[in-house]
Image (tube, rainbow, N blue to C red):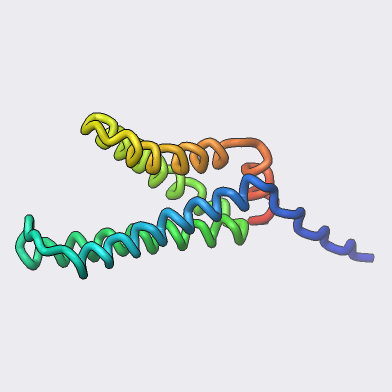
Length: 133
């Protein structure tokens, strides 16, 4: 007789939180970029530079959203790129602190720090390992 495969364990709260953080980070980057591109009057860059930077921001936001969905689906391979992006966001937050913008720095630091820590805790790691098998 063959054994019935065991059901996938329920998602821990840490995976739900990571998903929400990545989704909202990505959505905020995409919406913020589009609003800035539409409403901005000051041209710091030329047209090609503005378009390239806008595309880069939108792609970064899309990657964050995609990684959130992949982690939510149980893909352990999405964990490393998510960690790298969260670490970059943490580093970026310190430029706001150095510039004296404490609130913006915290808006960047807190969600990225939470997601980064949650990506390393045992329930997340265990669930991603069992869910991807």
